[in-house]
Structures are given as C-alpha cells and as structure tokens.
Image 1 (cartoon, one colour):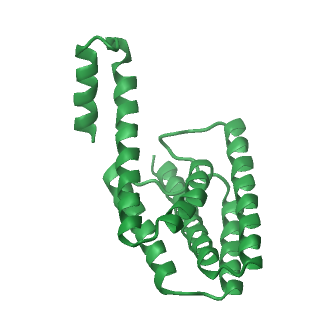
Image 2 (cartoon, one colour; image 1 turned 90 degrees about the vertical axis):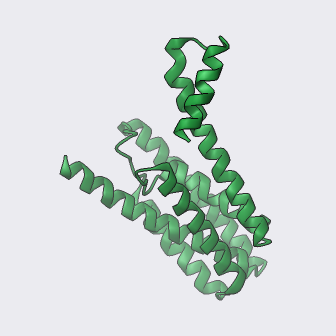
Length: 193
C-alpha cells in the first residue's frame, strides 16, 4: 500500500496538481484511502460470499463508530490490522449464520460488554495522542453510541430477532476485548519507554 500511495503521489506531483510542500500530506491521505478501500472491498466480498450483506452492514453500523470513538487495540502494521479485521468480521458472521443464542443470553453479553467499554473509556494510541478535552469528546460519543446500540438491542428483543441481537452481542464482545487489550498494550508501551 505504501508503494502504491508513493507512486500515485509521485504521479500527481509530476502533473503539477500538488506542490512539493504538500507531498507527505497527499501521500498519507492516499495511503489511508487505499487502505480503507481495500478493507471495505474485502468486507463486502466476504459478506457476499457468505450471503450475509445486511448482517455485515449492521456489523459496521455498530463497529465503525465504536472503534472510531472508543479506540481499542491497534496492531503495528496495516496488514496485521487488515487480517485481524477480516477474521473478526468473518468469525462474527459465521457465528451468527450457524449458531443461535437465546435473546436473554445475547442481551446479557451485549450489556456486559457495553459496561466494560464504558468503564474502559476511550483507548488512546501512542501514534495519536489526545488531550483531556478530546478524550472527553470521544468518551461522550462512545457513550452516545452505546446508548444508540442499547436502543437497537431493545427493539431487537421486542421483535424477537435472535440473529441480529446475537450479532450485536458478538460485535460488542469483540469491541470490549479490543478495548481492554488496547488499554493494557498502551499502558505496557508507555512503561517500556
């Protein structure tokens, strides 16, 4: 990805679209765009292969804002994150496709995971330090997202939708695990320095 982002940035620089001083900014933006495009395309392919596009979209409705605001474990390379994300998505969709938990069990997993996420709070990453003000904004947005997800879970219980409630429960279980491991890894990293 880094190589492709560099080649694209070199090309638009040679065409005079950007200035030399903006090179690193454009390279970084292209790198992020390429990584997001690859991850999104792979996720859609996985969902289509499993014939689970709507559950995949529901997964991302919950997963993306929670990871954006709440943070969690970040691996050292894009490739490691990419593989990890694909494994989480695939295992979640397969679990929902082939297993069913009672509504009560799914709700308890969701609620327990949501409490862990709220107690853990937003997880900072060493590559993106945030100040206290930003941290409060992330905490507020995380809490709002958890509240939104709780409303969805109540609707799913009322409509007796086991599979989507289980999907929500598994998603939040993964999010709580990555929040705890991210908090621990960041704490360990700061002690090692």
